Length: 261
Image (cartoon, rainbow, N blue to C red; front, side):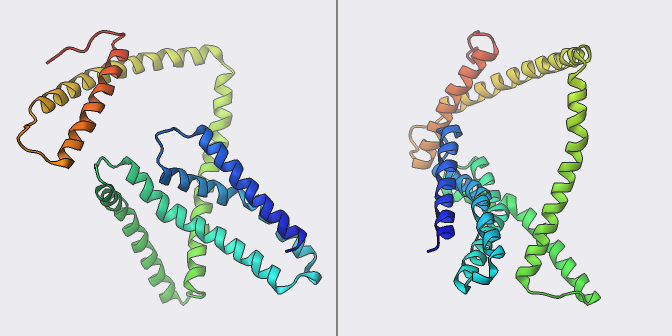
């Protein structure tokens, strides 16, 4: 192993440790290990480029002394980063986002809900890709392998999203700072926002009170003669959620007790 390759390895380890420590510090304690590992993988894949680019540039400048093993190492590294990021962004992250948001009580149920919610997007992507492939086949423009087309489609989508976000940011950010320079107008906006938020708070408080009453009635109507492990777990989660909602209702109502029903 050359000195530059050793530096790349040390840099990769440093990036991994730094990302792990940072995420562990800022992540909530309730976050599962799967979500934490996926987030860590995304951060590492993004920041490890900082360690790989200098090595690639130095090897490219010294191309005369570059052997085939180093070329394979650099090429494999870039391919690994690209395809791992591709799978992470298009498959794993969408599934995990919907998995965490699912309200099912079992792993299989959450996975099914996640697949159902993502199937519409996947079907849309497949249909658009199929139509594009037909259009290119008719026009005689199909050149390259499937991997090359996936790379081109991913880069095109990334450029489109970046263009839209940058276009919005170039207008919204200066406008935001321009409005901050006018305290009077900002105060008027805060007055309007305060009234709207107070109305939303009252509406949410009444909705929460109704939900608490429904949850209490559901718990009281539970039949003790029918025993089901999944049902018992569901009622246990409902009881814990009810207690948290009651505390939240106390905070919203400035300490007033929740009316029993």
